[in-house]
Length: 287
Ligand SMILES: O=C(O)CCC(=O)C(=O)O
Ligand SMILES: [Fe+2]
Image 1 (cartoon, rainbow, N blue to C red):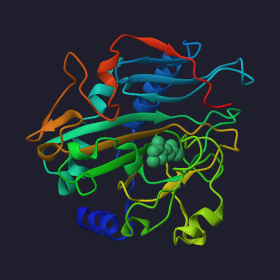
Image 2 (spheres, rainbow, N blue to C red):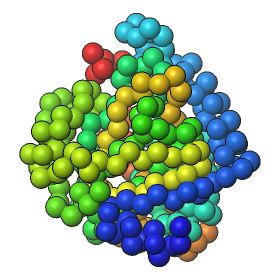
Image 3 (tube, rainbow, N blue to C red):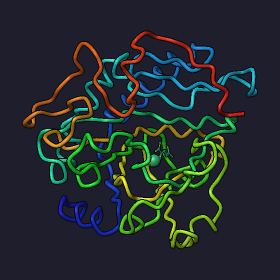
């Protein structure tokens, strides 16, 4: 798809699909590195955190085996993923939206291993995860999230689902009720209807490995648990315009690729500096 068509679709629909952002050997490498990352993370008995780095574990104490369902900011543990976050293909995709100086506020991979019973995300708008809205000149205008399929993403294995044009009515408060975790429970159709959305409009974003989808902070999206026999690893990175954002790790400055520095900076977790030491978090939020 041409750049102008991507920009138009993003503005009109709140999302756009970009086929083959990565292909060939680059996808095979991404899949290999993701498998290695899973092996590294799953060594931890419960959720492990160190700075912005985190491995979210479902422990065997409460599941039929140990699973890792998310990793955050693994660029701190893995050189390939530090380089991946500033791949030139990503700059090319983001430049029409964010310019040539870009920071990254989220780096995540979400796995949905078959058998892990907790793997869906209730419908929400990502603005709920930008705690310090005043740290940006205009966080909605200056943010783009990029999701890259590592495995094929299908309806059966819990692909991302988006409500087109749902970004035009402001913040809707979906999934803000309950205990806050968007991974517990499912969104009922009537919750969407109550905020003026039509569940029949939901689009299943099915992707081949290497395909990407971009969405904004007000775009309503979620995903269902995996009911197939195939994992769904999905890399999710959120970027902001560098000049207008006081949060995030530089990814590009004046078009130049940037690596992480020596110590982390504030991204999404406003409590980062309360504890920069590694620790285990055995909060049983999934029960
Ligand atoms: O991985 C998914 O299917 C969606 C995750 C998501 O929307 C989020 O973490 O904000
Ligand atoms: Fe989200």
